[in-house]
Length: 89
Image (cartoon, rainbow, N blue to C red; front, side, top):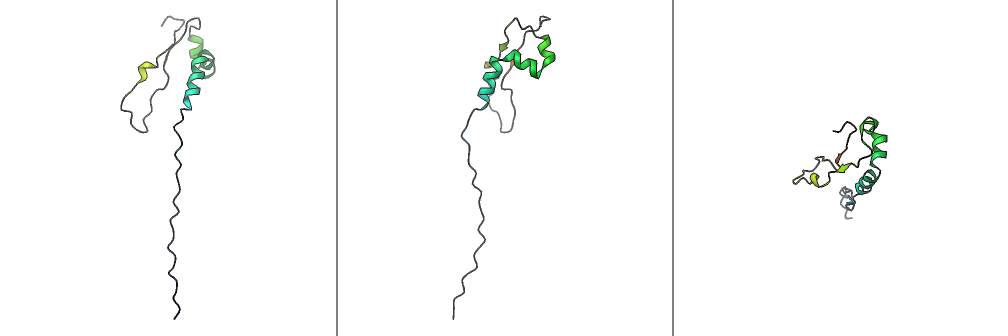
């Protein structure tokens, strides 16, 4: 009697998920915004650009953004700027 081979079990194809190395791609974006702040403001927020006092330097508040205990999926502010206005505010 001939032995019948066992039917092959359907193999689950497991998709390999490659973890990308932690690259801070936003560092370049932040550097560009910091260096070309008023130019960026003119493009993205023209109303604020018109009200800004461009003779004074903006104050970047990077140290105030350190927030402990951020949960996954929670969004936080990356770059905060105190923009001097022509009205003095």
